Length: 178
Image (tube, rainbow, N blue to C red; front, top):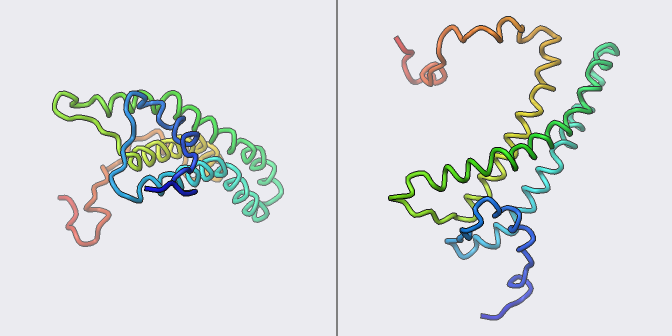
């Protein structure tokens, strides 16, 4: 098979950092187009992950004129914290959460199951975990203005939920729990 420009796409610099946590294993592709789509997906997810703090700042900058001057003074410092907290969450996820998670998930039930990492599933797992960690670390910035407005009240956040949430409460077709 001839190697054209697509066959010689330099994707090793893209995948090498991602495959660090599963180093002895090499990700596999099981579809003819999967390697190509992985080579496209990694930069897209990476760009989204890198630009998300800036996008969230732009969203806040768009919303801030709706607040009064007094509210703006208290909200603006928190806006500066969003990109930093998000990046701290991503770094925390990469160095603290992902290595033990990968180790646990790949060694779980290893006596009966052989682990072959599928490249697309592995990339999605890494990116979703990093995104979730960034959002979790930036969440206090969302909760602080809500707390100042009075919703949710700090006293209600310390109390346990009065009734457990059940999927039947969320769906109109299922009868409520008795």
